[in-house]
Image 1 (cartoon, protein in one colour):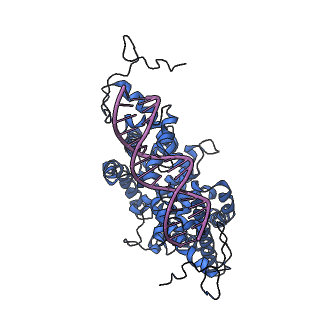
Image 2 (cartoon, each protein chain N blue to C red):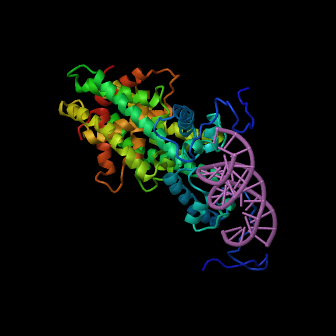
Length: 224
Length: 224
DNA sequence: CCTACCGATCGGTAGG
DNA sequence: CCTACCGATCGGTAGG
């Protein structure tokens, strides 16, 4: 029972009382930790449903219900359904960028371009199929439902994420392991990986490591 | 001014009069050639709009308007919005299968597996980006909006289309040109090609032939 | 956060 | 095929 204080208006000590919240525009800052706690289930439900049914195919009522709320409540936390999509995509991209940074930092000093590519591929699979896996697929497949302003806001992080692959592919190209033009190769490689969202089953026969081996074998003629 | 006969009820000679058509279930057979003529613009508008805005993001009113009809008219020709999606996907798959058959038939007797793969890749790009290009992308990206019955109806053709790649990849694997497992390679390769829908611009710098060269270079270490 | 509600839009249909 | 319409659902809001 954590649903007390029916409507006691602004009296004395009501500790978990709903502090005077302005309507419509909830704080992005975590000033009130409780705000964040209630945003969380909405964001996660939205990510899961947007991935499963698409942005247009998901109603805000679906999201509210999945988060254990009533139909109007999401709009206390988010200005619009679209703002919810933006948060999902934004969070997904932040996670992906961090994951990439960690993966590269984990490499030993002077690792070969070959090892670098393996690391990038493996972490990309993690982002697509790992524990946080609803977020980036939503970005990939619901991109068109973002406004152009929202796309621009994400673009910097997204471009940096993709640009990270280029020097690795260029090095592999110079040493002859990659024959295709690096810019086009990057598009094909990311496409091949991104499409795995359509067919890869995390509970299937292959692990993400095995998948990485196969990808490297395909792109670099690498024998696992 | 091609919008005459306001409401002249069934008098004498009214040549373009709407022949007594039954409601709800229009003929799939081309018994009445005019029927087919009016279905056509609906199918093409649907394909284009489904591709541009998604199935859920497209209203039947959008489709009707794009075909020059009023809002209720699509339902004279199709039972439902979903039936229209099915026709688009079905037609796309039929076109793809025919295109694949033609491409293989065009190959000289005893063509190398290498040449066979090139041919398959090239014709797949044609299906994705050529003149008939709205249909297969709709299948690829709106698959979830098909009913399970509809998916099953398409599955045979789709499976045959994909299976066609397997012997080619197996031959390449045997001769050492392809190091990845052929089944996984097929998924990655088709994914890389399918993803090009997201970034390839037909009016851009690269032709479909150039794209094919790059793909072969990437997958087989082929020098263009 | 809930209740109660609004206007808009949607897929689809009756009847001609 | 059009006109006119229906019931359902949708995103979102007022007010507490």
